[in-house]
Image 1 (cartoon, rainbow, N blue to C red):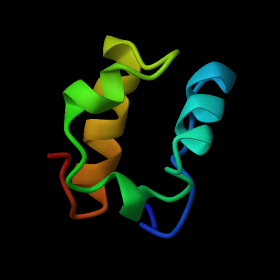
Image 2: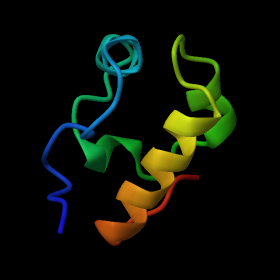
Image 3: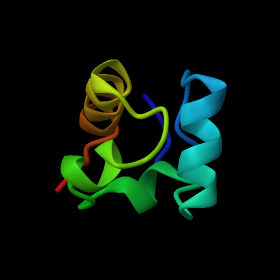
Length: 64
């Protein structure tokens, strides 16, 4: 199981940098954030959003 205090796992470098720059350094910070907001980040395309959705679900959380 993924720990919500861990950084988002297995993302490309571009998506990881964009998430970190936007202040999303831990999965717990992504809970409640809308997919539309995440999609505006550079490198956060459909595959990244689907992966984040699955990781959040596994951690018992969900995106907004």
